[in-house]
Length: 451
Ligand code: NDP
Ligand code: 2IT
Image (cartoon, rainbow, N blue to C red; front, side):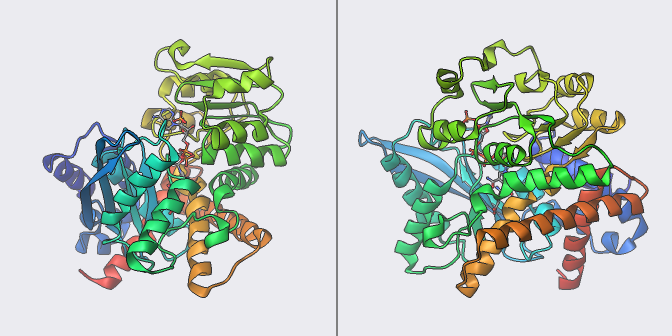
């Protein structure tokens, strides 16, 4: 048995759910890096693969808080500190009812390689809670965040572990979490990124993931000698932070993003989504997308209940470029078939692992350019890295400075990924390219640092 099969077997025996997202993420990475493991014995001699798939530590804690009716509510809180070979643990916090330790292990594992790809000094981590911010008052969100941070603050620090946002955690939550950390520790340091600008955040961090996704797609289209985004119809799923700024940048570059979605349904607006209205609905009103129809009666709204089986409505809309930006496994094999039948040329992942393994394989087999999340959405954490630099040096960079650095980061990642795929005999397989580049740097650091 080779080391890859041995590691996967070992995970199965250690009660890892083989149908879960963590196993899915690990399997993909290990399959990608097998040529590297075969060609360089150091990785086997140092048991790097076995060590990489086990988190350094997982913290689980109780989060009790008082709701607006003075009833005690109880949630689970987590932080998975996966690997710090390249720098302090770094990665977002997700507040969503579906959160459990398996999902956070998948996200933390992906984060190690993503952060490595940015070229910055950041290890990989993820955390969060099964708390659902939806429908809660600001006071309830604040009380939850205070209780969550009471425990989390024991394990984080600007040189130890630096959390940020993810699903359900935006500027409001980061503000409350930062305030609590500051109250408890009396420290005003860069312990969280994604802070609002006026108290230490980086300009462009809110936009960074979505903008970076579009910059990455642009680079990949150039590498592949395909038509640019200008004038092209694009489909986007999700309507949160990543989706909204993906739509905004697509519009700025002259593309026509025609869809967005949430957990209840999707909007199809042939003239292009009005991003200002979308921001108002989602950021200010925190309402359902159906509200879009009140302003644009000619747009279409399809409810989740009306989607065909094993299909997500957005992916039935013909497009040149598709951008899944909502959540994991939201683009199925059926969706991939529909997109291909409708002529899609490029799929760029904004969310983490939104495409199922079967759908990914089909895109690659059919020659669709497939830009994987850990490369394509690395712009968010890269600008988090820039925020850490600014906090540490007490400097503020301008929007233009951050934007230029972000564009350069996405360019460098796309080049490295494409070149590496070629060097390892898997030209155009950007999944393998990204996994090999990301892994190699972490693995070399782990060897150099010893056990
Ligand atoms: P938000 O909370 O801002 O938005 C999430 C969006 O996805 C919402 O439209 C939400 O709909 C939808 N969604 C979430 N869960 C589900 C679900 N189970 N089924 C259907 N729709 C769902 O999160 P972000 O935009 O920050 O994150 C989106 C994705 O991007 C995630 O995969 C995240 O890990 C990834 N990511 C985020 C980064 C960041 O900087 N924020 C950086 C890199 C990746 P609804 O409002 O109805 O719940
Ligand atoms: O998945 C991700 O890269 C994020 N949620 C952003 C993490 C960060 O630390 O900015």
